[in-house]
Amino acid sequence: MGAWALLLPLLMATAQAQVCSVNNTIFEVQENTNQSGPLADIYVPAGQQVTLGQSSTPYAFRIQGTQLFLNVTPDYEENTMLQAHLECRSGDTVVTQLRVLVFVLDINDNAPQFPFENKAKNISEDTKVNTIVIPETELEAQDLDKDDILFYALQEVTPGASNFFSLVGTNLPALRLDQPLDFYSWQKMTFQLLVRDTQEENAEPSHRAAATLDLHVWPADLRPPWFLPCGYSDPYVCINAEYHGAVPLGHKLPAPLVLRPGPVRAVDGDQGISQRILYSIMQGQDGTFAIDADSGNLTMTRSVPSPKTFTLLVKGEQADRARYSVTRVTIEARNAFGSLPYFPKSRYYGRVARGSGAGVEVKDATAPSLPLRIWAQDPDFPDINSAITYRITNNTNFRMDGETMLTTVLLADETVFYAEVEANNTVTTDTATTVVEIQVLEWEKPSPTGPSGPPETPTSPEAGGTTRPSSSTTLEAPRPSGPSQGPSMTSSGGGTGPHPPSSTTLRSLASSTPGGPPSVGTSTFLPSASPSGGSTQTLKPGTSQPMPPGPSRTPQTSALRPVAQVLLRKSSGSPAPQL
Image 1 (spheres, helix red, strand yellow):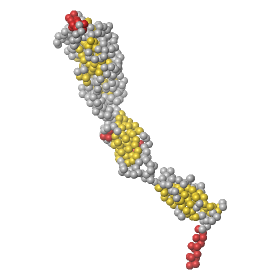
Image 2 (cartoon, helix red, strand yellow):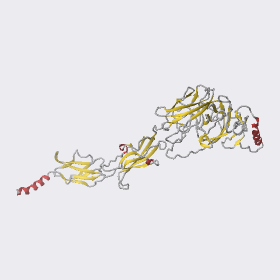
Image 3 (cartoon, one colour):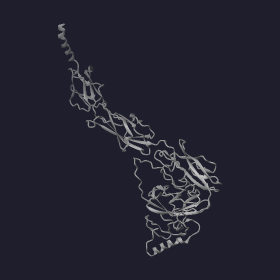
Image 4 (spheres, rainbow, N blue to C red):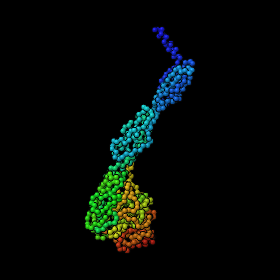
């Protein structure tokens, strides 16, 4: 055995000398590393040649002489392992086959990527707190670096939005609702969703990515219809208005009833949904009154023979029948003795914002948050006479809607308008007139308190009148222009500017008795608003500023004396008196 032991190494060395070999067959190389030197040395016996076999990674290696070189810059994301298949041949005969494996080591060289740049999501306002509104699978980013752990953060763009939403965890980018939503205050919230591939922000190397989240709060059907104007309201509740009116005995009024505090009108309490409201009388109906299902206008179907008080329960129901509300309408039938109607004020002052379109309420200049009410009194009806209707006689820029005034056109310029309002008792045909001065001016509303602002309190005309059917009424939407139903009547006068038309003969103001109707006047001309829209008033022949006489019966010439004084002062160069 001793001789064989000495002979074995010699035989092995002789055998190795007849085949190819390499000094190492397994290597590890970091990706993105340029290997300029040889990867391995190849021993090739005399009379043999070494080549790359077909199973080698394409283009990854080359052989120069008896050295194996890496021919590419390794990229872990393309190949995690490169293989060189070496074949040693003697002529056409393959004598030896060798495999050299190069394992590519991953490094942090790729930035994470979101599958979106901007993602929009609709979220119902009645979503429960702690609900996952966007799951992790929709928000997670992808990183080609296999060992990277991604760290997420949510950064608000809309101030205060982070009070409502958060991520479940730093490494779990599911979006969770943290507090109840309110469509009226927050209709859209925007976030930046951030991700990086290192825990420490200042680590090197570190890669980041960002995407935008737009969260739209959708209204939910949470509130029933609201009868306007609300006695109290906030974004969640309304104390419904109750309505009242009065009719004369023995007469069937031809037009819809004028009521206080305004026409029977309800809107969907969910402003963003705005379901159409349908009206019906639930209780108290004996056939005397009917209600229009679409508009809510109350009309008489017959006269009332004796004094009586009607109490009607009116239902306003959403068109989808999901919710409804009920209010009370009280109508008193009482004796009328033919007293003349009269306006308690000789002039009313209103204002409207410049740029207002058609259907916008004229506000009370003394209380700009409230609509201007123009109403005539009747001694026979201490509170309201539903038989009295209203119209504007001389200015087509406005129209009456019950006891409130609405615009009919776009008011683009700052100016002053004058309009004569006529009250007509549809039973006795007696009339009374008054003047309204309307200023069109720049009017800044208070800034909203939230990103989209809380909703304004729903309003309705703070006066009698009727309303029109609407399929999508919003709480503050201007009412459409056009003929008003019920007691509102189309203006019979011409003129579209700030001056009453020259073709209209108007009455001047006479002296009035406190507590009673003004004295009767006669037709004259008074100073009109200046064309520039300022408050300076000049007398212009053929253009008149109406002044009301009150009830229209017999003329009284004493009202001409103030006008004569104005004319004399103007002709002599003296300033006209302030009216």
